[in-house]
Length: 301
Image (cartoon, rainbow, N blue to C red; front, top):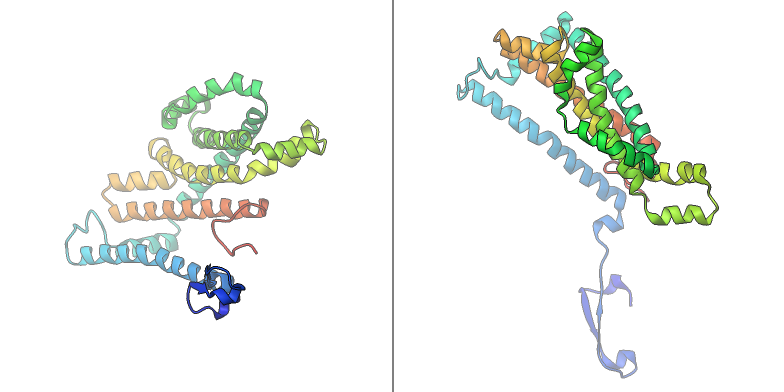
């Protein structure tokens, strides 16, 4: 029986249709739009998602603008989005904004690179070797619960004033996020993958390279993406305390001088920097793990 000719989702067959036997109910399922044309359905879904992603912040910005124009809020404390955009454009055109953006970006990239490298190395070793994990995990767990900003005075004593304490603080924060995600990913590799490697006679190094490493990498990259956002948060907080430049210093200093429009310009720049940095890590992760499921993009055939 062809499903295309069935007018309903269920049909009762006559006794004569099956050689005089008892009546049978046949369920007929018609393919949905996503099954008939998956590419078109995906494009439509992505279009709806993109529209929602743009509509929600646009609606909030319009509401904020309306509240400032109608004096529902104090525009001296909460400047209108048009005022913030105009001030940001002017500071960018005058060259006053880019030194702070560049200073924050340098610290984030340097600290993220160091923390990611160290966290990934420790996570791999501790996830693969039980004795190493037993020796180091209690110590690292104790250090993990210490608020990272509380370590800033320690880094100031170690490295003095300058870039050292800022980079060290970001690297330490990123280290723990990457270490935990990497160790958990290696330990969580399915036993079936390990057994398959053993069946094919893989040695310790081959097991590590061809089984544990590729199987754990997608989850590791998720931890790296989370760490990228945390790195931006930490450096902004650190720059408010112990820096003479950067977006964090710009936000704190402008608030002290009651320049709230400049403060919001700094906040917007931090948000943009965090999104761009996180999406860059996501993009690199997709290229490194083409076998992993995608949370965005075209569906796999």
